[in-house]
Length: 311
Image 1 (cartoon, helix red, strand yellow):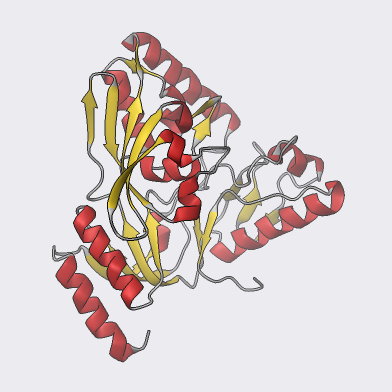
Image 2: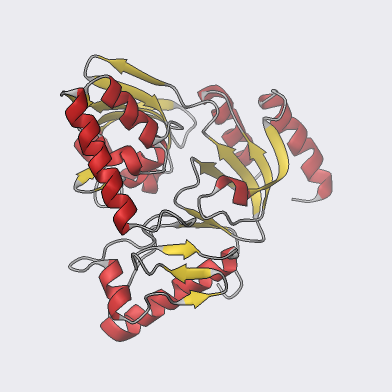
């Protein structure tokens, strides 16, 4: 977008989302990702509700401007060069959580850990596995987030989305076609606004104890002391990504400040002031080595935004 085109575009964004600070230019994305890397987003917008969100997306489509929906940035690698488009943050206007008997209804921007804690307070069981997942409910629904034997598909009953035509609609869990780290939402491009989770009555102390046990297991097995995006690669059918990476001799492999975790080889970590390029190159190295040695194609679970040298 040229400078001449950019000014009226920015002004229109500010008209749609008119609160102070809700539209920002050249927002540094390292402040919004758990990898703690990433250059500037051309525009960073925080809509307060579905109406503002729909208008922002409609404007982007009209002006042919790329846009990206951001939750907690926990499954995202943003280029050092940044993103030439609009990053739409869901955290500000979509974080409400409410309990309706055994149903929890939460906004797409609510952290899964917060939803799990709210479930515990309400003595509802079934979401303990999500207590340590750093992402948001919206992103979790899109990728069917899971951990320690639990997945969102086990508790999701419906999601309310903004569809590709800019209209809100409610989809059932069957409509979502949830599988391992996949859903129909990835193909349709619909944006999650809110979701309903059906849980069952339990005992608060037992729920709390299970959450604490899983937290201990995470701390023991995962490199939580370093910035990362969690498990970097999807689990290949019939294999475990971390085991393949370890068997390929890549434990501790380092490019720049990025490293294959010595604690858990399925994690690429920002060990020492890594750049996004360091992380991207290390991921590519891991994929190439595993392919060469085991004829298995690793697929990144982490989403990549922006341009990288050599891609």
